[in-house]
Amino acid sequence: MKTIHLPYLETKIEALTEFEQAYQRIALEVRAQAGQLNQEVDLAQFYFQKTFDSSIRGQNHENICKNLENAYRNIASKARYIVDLIAKMPAA
Image 1 (cartoon, rainbow, N blue to C red):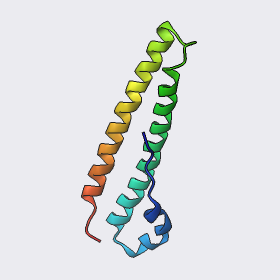
Image 2 (image 1 turned 30 degrees about the horizontal axis):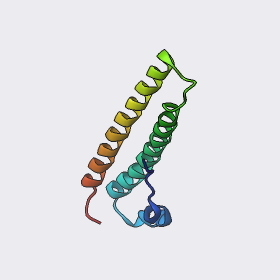
Image 3 (image 1 turned 120 degrees about the vertical axis):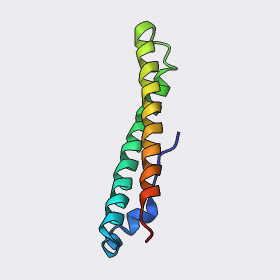
């Protein structure tokens, strides 16, 4: 799973002041949410790797699998929220 990067927004962050406050707020929220999504992706990758660790067995393995499923759900939810935010952006 790959992380999200917003290079255009990152390089133009100072230019946001030229836009309406609603646009600025949503753009900054998208930026923040992308950072949180990336943290979830990192967590999912960690748990995914742990599922292959043969020293982890029984209840611990089950817990790792549950944590991985939760991370995937959080990623899907966060991605949907980011899409919804973008859809709400006023025309620039």
